[in-house]
Length: 364
Image (cartoon, rainbow, N blue to C red; front, side):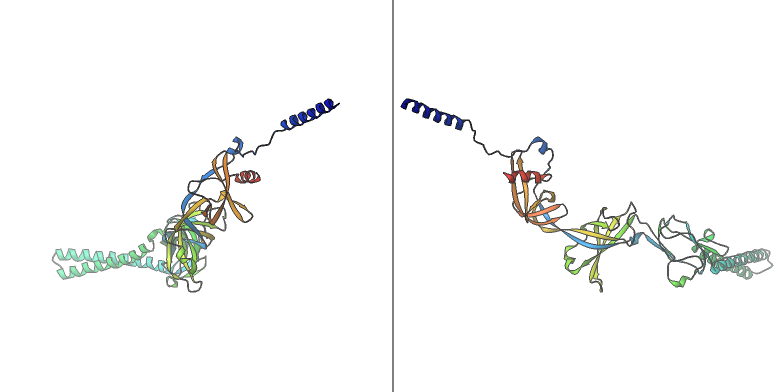
């Protein structure tokens, strides 16, 4: 009986030992980047950069004054026809308006009169010369006739010069004066219509023509920001009409005086406008990049992982060596973030789909 009990107890101990041996112990598994995930990420490197400050200003598109011509009336008269409208593209020499002018009619009347005087003076000089050579008249009479002829020529040339200044026969005839375009460009200002009376002493231009392939953008800088802007700084201009478009340029000129009313200083940005999208008087947002003297570690803004008021990045060494690091952010300008601790120059960061890896690493 005792022997049976001992055999039973031995069997139970042996069964328990075998059962314990068959249960494996689970080991901590380390996260390893799979081939599929490796193809889904992007990696960038920590660098040491000049700290950039982005100054946001409001701006207005204007003409490039170097490519603008104002057309003034050289004569007085009544506008018979205005042949162009605001915004029209014009070519050099194209007729913009026709003016019926008493001045033009008077100039051509004076030209006819002086031509007649020249003809009479020429005949008198020729006769005096013939008589002088034949000994019938004196040399004095011949010289007087010659001087009269020269005076008649001078009077005619004076009238002809006035007509030539006004365009000559190409732009003025029959009492009508044709206002023509002095350059190729666009009509950006029109101040005259058919039926209007004009005078040269009015001091106002009839048309303004500008080549809009290049424009100026004026932005206001307030006193607190004057020290943050210099000539040559890179600028991004975003018109309100095309918020998705970015025009790149540089600060071309800075005014040395403040506007007495707005207390702002004006800066000028020179922009190419080959697509003709920028129009005068358009409003635009102006971002000025200001590189400070100090340096700091910079990383792509896309690499940041904000969590509960803190910022993290995923540092990559190899597919099996990845870690989450908390960073302290100084500022973010555009697509660049400046930090003051947490990383070193040359560290590699995951900048795409890093949130997926962050969740895997923090879940372990």
